[in-house]
Image (cartoon, rainbow, N blue to C red; front, top):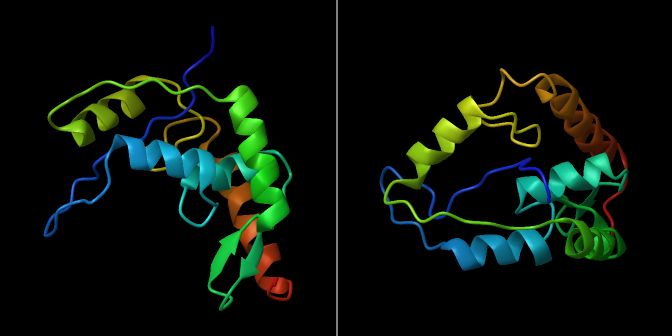
Length: 136
């Protein structure tokens, strides 16, 4: 049995537009996307020591082709997903983050003891990526 370390919602509450994301697309992106589009992938990549690099135009940051593949393989072996249907998932997300120890969430989670460490780790990875040349 695992331990809940992170929560995410789909769709995101949008003040002036409708979200095009749904649970399946969110989970798929977390498991097969890249660190630019998934804060969970960015966090896990940093914790696993994968190098973050600027790619394309230099504005996007990912773990590169090999790093993202390594991260996807790690997640396939170690990460598990569960879900709950809720009419206003953003309210449930806030309640879970405030009431549980979810060390991998940064948003709304400054009260978590791991928050400063994780924020610094991710910030350092981004800073290193800015100092490196853009990756092909």
